[in-house]
Image (cartoon, rainbow, N blue to C red; front, side):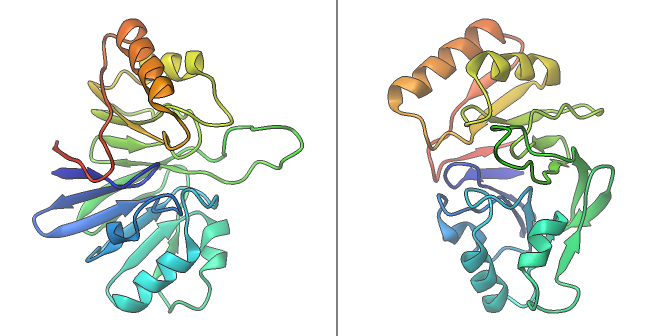
Length: 210
């Protein structure tokens, strides 16, 4: 399976000609959805869900399907019957030939002033994208797509989360707000305090075989 990072929280998975994209938001390159068969959206925030870009992709590709939480599905009303499926915690489904399971229900708390929105992470055949939450799946994770920086987290929590999941490998996502200094600090901490997980950050557009 080939994984390509497309900036911030977005990744593209490709296998045997099938393409699945997770969280193509406003900070990721819309070309991530070119030729995609399926898109998974963890929650409604714009850095994970670009409504205009996704509607454009759906219009350009009649075969494209979307799986997401109810709040995102409501914003995609009118794209066509059967093209958007609502999923959540505990759901299992097949998207573009990939076996997917939903884990988690809510976005992490940023501040009590702001309401918490629905957030479901997706475990795709051993690859887990938690969205904006530190959800620990009750099944083994081979590769963790690790949100290394967010308004709702601190570095110590990210390290503890990495250890709790216990994946063999972690690839950085949700890192668009970090400078080179911040990226270096995160990498140092993860390599020092979470040595059981091999941590790596891909540059936008870079790929890795899993």
